[in-house]
Figure (cartoon, rainbow, N blue to C red):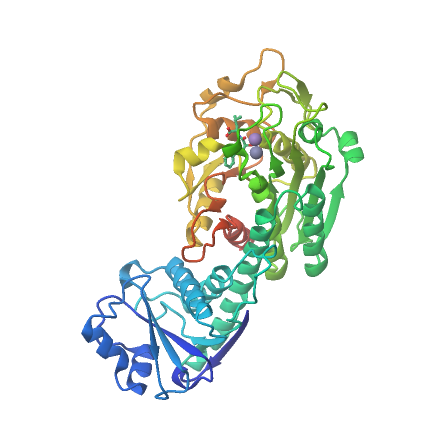
Length: 499
Ligand code: BES
Ligand code: ZN
Ligand code: MN
């Protein structure tokens, strides 16, 4: 998508369509909507008076201008009530408007920035949400379809009457485009089937990010995993024909101050069959997406490398495939993680915490002192919170709150769950330091606590995205398939911490 930002009159843009908006309850449109209405001889206010345009959230009304103004069409987007209109609303309406125009063959459109008027949203933030909405809302995963066609809509001109606002709008649009593209890389990776998105392909994707945006990459192979003692990652990978990859990306935004760092860890199980504790057909159906956490940290790094915040960020993805074979990990086996802790395997399907155990141990061994891990860790998470919100778990309330706030600011909700010590009894082992499951009760919490066993005291937050990583419907900026959560949260968090 090409974005232009210009000062001027939206009714005079040489484009296929213009997008204006209307809040619910407004009978005489003002601002750019009012100007377009006047130029068209009151066509919009007449439809408001008739009751066809109500300004309800999600309402889209297409008007053919028949020569009254330069653009052939005007799309009036309803915004709902100004009091409840947020940046998430901007993202949604921008996505829906873009899809609407694309579906009727419009190639270029001009739009105003929604919400900066009556709703009082910050212009730059609104412009960012607009660009995110367009880039996310136009996303498609159709590379395997013979009848896939190019998108129609390929150019958006953001028009602002007040010239003094152009610079703010330009940076907002640029940041939004960068973040939207980061989210879309995550979606691309998580939508890709497991026969192509292997651990090696995840490393390729990381290499692409490294080469395109100048971040350092290191990929640890099986031999070196053995030397480092990554017994947990190796155990998960041992039944697969696909070699595991331990992927590291390093961005140095504050090289003078190496303690100013954060590690972003993502579960990279490219397919989760369950292992010998094999899943049933329904449970296995979406397990190509079990690397969504890993994809999210790679997607976030793509954006971070372009936004250049003053902080050092290391992305770590332990990537492996959880399969079955004569060489598979067995229930009852005892393995040793990189930090020396032994783990009795109670269930081979609880593999995410195993690969993350080694990722955490590694992160601490290289001096990362603040950590966030992202994982499609437990089915229990989806049961607890559904698909409206991810779970946040941590050992430091202030840091957890920072992550939750970053999510709230970007329209990705996270809700903190408790990490009481009493739960730890659930994964006590008779023969090893711990076992890898803690029973049915509080399954998302015990999963989080088990990962926490490897973090050695650093402030850490675990985001369980099992409920939110995929969606079954097209709504606002979301497209059916991988959502790309929580790329926006991670980017925001890193920028907040950079100050
Ligand atoms: N990848 C799954 C969790 C999952 C389930 C993600 C559904 C997305 C949708 C994870 O590896 C898993 O299998 N977890 C087990 C843990 C149990 C064995 C303790 C689960 O949730 O059943
Ligand atoms: Zn899994
Ligand atoms: Mn599993």
